[in-house]
Structures are given as C-alpha cells and as structure tokens.
Image (cartoon, rainbow, N blue to C red; front, side, top):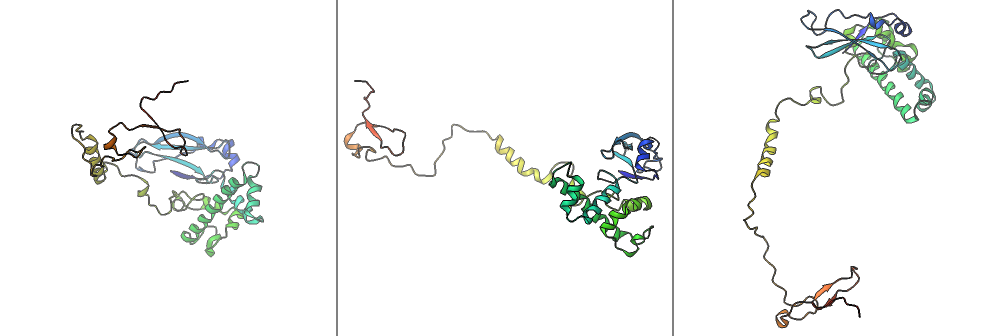
Length: 277
C-alpha cells in the first residue's frame, strides 16, 4: 500500500540527503491503536530516477507492506509526475503523436514501443482528468473551479504535481494513478472475481468423481465383445482369378504389389521362389 510522503524537497535534494532514512510512519494504518508487530521493512529502489529509494514498513498480522511515496513521484508508473506531464504536453504540441514519441524515446526503443509508452501516459492523465472533474468540486488551487481542465494544460503547468501536494490523502486514495493511489481494476471485473474461492470445489467435483469410477473399473478379459454388425459372408469367387472358390478347392494365389498405386497385382504360386537362372 502506498502512502504519500509530504516533502518540500526536490528529487535531487531527496536523493542527496537520503531522506528515505529519516522518513517515519508512527503507527500501523491497519491497527492505529497498536497491538500488531508493525515495524520498518527496509527500503526499495526505483528504476527512475536512479539512486532514489522508498522507505517501507510491514505488518505481519495484516500481511501488508506500506511504502512512503514522495510527492514528486508518480504512482504505479516509473518516473516523476512532472516528467509524465511534460511527455503529455509534448504529445499535444507536436505535429503528431508519432513525432512526439520518436522525439521522446526514439534513441532508446523502437517507434512502436515508444508509441505504447507515450499512449500509456496520455491515457493515464486522461483518466485522472476525468476523475478530478467528477470528484473534486472545489480545488485548493482554484484551477479546477470551472470543472474542466484540458490534458495539455496539465502537462504544461505541472498541475498533477501541485495536486499531489495539496490534496488530502483520503482523496488521493480515491483517484487513479499516476496522481492517486487507487488500485487498478480490469474493466468489467469486480475485485472478488479476480480470486478463486478457497476450499473444495463442491458440486463441480461430481463429474470428476464419476470419471474416477470409470477409470478404476476392472477389465474382464474373458468376456467376449459382441459386434453390433452382422458378420460378412465368405467370398464366393477368387479375388485374383475370378474362379469360384468352391469349384477349385485350392489355396488362393498369393498376391504381391510393386508398391506403386498404378501397378497391377502380380499373382504367383505358393511354391514360387526368387531363383537366378
């Protein structure tokens, strides 16, 4: 669980002074009155910016970790809030989104990857803008008083960074990333639908039990299998010569094939041998 860390330090000062060492969380958010084994759980590094670490705590009884995220960091996206806003502003000011993606990430990744990277940030800022317009009726800064803020205004004026520092933690928990800390959910699925129910399968185990009974059934090899079709009558003529079998009373000639479908069968007597002359 991410918790906002109220700091007036810049990212450079935060890294230089290693302020994550002095960050403190006085009580467990799950057990404010105490009674749990809440303790500091070290820190973890963020990929971007390099050298930055996040202080972390852990509640064994609640099986949950808590991280203090500085105000300038984006939630659930790498980098700073100002960097995301700058990328969105560059996308709206460029002649095309492809040109903006190539300018921002052209030397690092391919153009399709750069487009995905930029569109992910544009979509995130757009979702934040809709959530703010729906939930925040009176902004502390006064920018949202009209009820509408364009995404390019957010990118140019670093409005997400100011909102992170000014909005209450309770309101931030109801806003999506990268501004707020609301958990992401797949569209059309509830939280309970993402997990399997614990315990036995219940009624769904009946078909598997029936299959187990069939697999464990003993096999009676002495029982003859009865065919549902009537047996074929014996042939009355020889397949090779066409003569009646009852008249010749002789063993039918053995047939050999050359292996090709176009060749005709060759008949020979049973005493025939392959001898050289």
